[in-house]
Image (cartoon, rainbow, N blue to C red; front, side, top):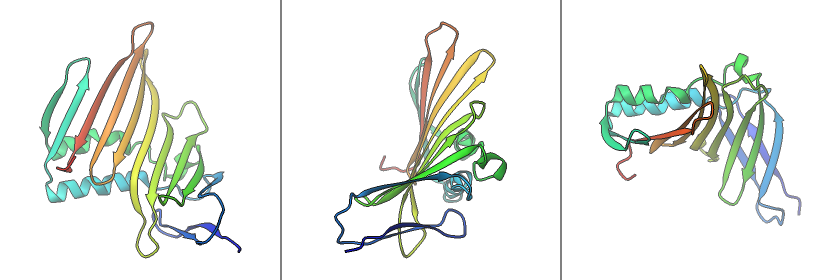
Length: 199
């Protein structure tokens, strides 16, 4: 039996449909690599839509912070929630002048099912080094974002700053930040912003 596994890119902001046929004995995971010649997933627009939802619904937001300066848990204003999420929206890889600095690969997993778009920087000077977007395909409506993961590295003066950012759709976002200066021990801090009361 012939088995077809295809990824279709549709017009519009990151609209994606996966057509998978059943009854096949091929491996469940399929990988496809390509240059980012088409418009990458609009991560910044997606993040802004999530923040707009938090703002419009006035959802209660809690900040959990850990690090060398201590641990604390506080209620967060919507304004501060939006401000702390800024690293997720900069730079915007959907803009052509930024997208040209990245390569794109996609990985479809039929067992979940999900598809992951991976973007890797081609230049060392680009602060954003990596972006992973995990989608849950839906043949009848727009595909749902499961999560977004970003890695950044940049310098502020003589301090190297490394960030690992994770966004869990509709639940929370988290930023792990490590600062290293000279021979000093790295200093790590974590902030987690939660608006889902079940978390």
